[in-house]
Image (cartoon, rainbow, N blue to C red; front, side, top):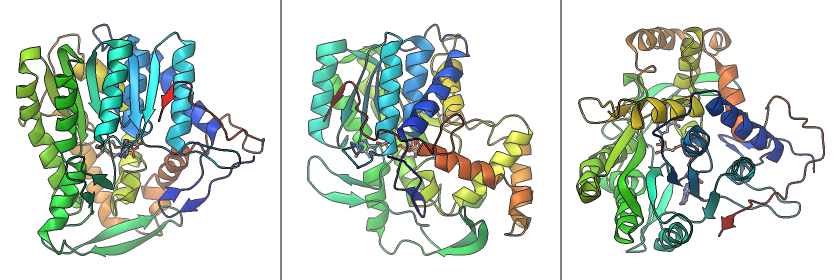
Length: 400
Ligand code: NAI
């Protein structure tokens, strides 16, 4: 079929397999252009492996140090006349390229919050790899069914005390307007968001993997967090999602204790704000990202998910020195360039004056839009979108 983007707000309902393949190849080429990570991971489990930071983590591990990878995610498979989700096509592309390069790569499609998927993953590790030496936790989800109680939690993106009014952009139309977001009405909304995006599920994974004996000596585990500028604090860091991130970060010492006898360690890496399916859903953030892109590109320090994850592996988690650089709160900071004072000062200056009229000049809204479409395999250089494309693409080693 001929596949075109079909957009509803911050979601694209279609995805292009050839575009996904080209995106994955571009990410692989980037990692291959860097020096091999000599002390890099060898057997890796990535939870949330099909898009965004998780996909780039998987590519960095495989093509940066030749790691065998198992990826877990929740995506829709294609059928005749029906498209798959982008993460499905990304994974088909990744596995194909990894197998071509002689690497082990298998995937599990299902609800990572469930006990069943955890058990399936353990069985697969036991059967094929024995143990893993790195577990990447990169889930982003609006809901979670608790595996022990069966309670279904939905997360919310809200400020906590006061209503928050600031600028936002509709990145399709380029209209900048004020948006007011009402604060949570009940404490329960905060707790629900923590239940979905906090650290409990990460802990369940590490506990189960450890109890099954599939974690190697010296194992590392990393999950991803965000801080960002003060202007997004009310909706992000001091909002409901920020409470979940606090909970995720507070899980690090608990996991360190759990991994002590294996000589293992756990980390939270604070990453840069980037266009992903998850971040485009947060009000105010897309406008901030558009300005940030402009400033960082002008300074020659812009990075996408692959540059971020390659740097996380090469310069932090598996640095030559053997030391993992941490901030005063024990976190890895790969958002260091985003948070540079000169970058933030320029972003703040632009923020004050940005409007619908000057959006195109003072921000990189074009770059934001392109990144958004590229998440779904569109607007990728070298892909002929007028050509018939087979939508039924299978993932070579998938378990559902
Ligand atoms: P994403 O939406 O691109 O990726 C989410 C992944 O989770 C996908 O692989 C998806 O299939 C998987 N997933 C969702 N629900 C699942 C379920 N129930 N079972 C199995 N898999 C499931 O998101 P992104 O942005 O890469 O986020 C990953 C992490 O990075 C999140 O913790 C996010 O908060 C964090 N982060 C994101 C930043 C950004 O600007 N995008 C910045 C800093 C941190």
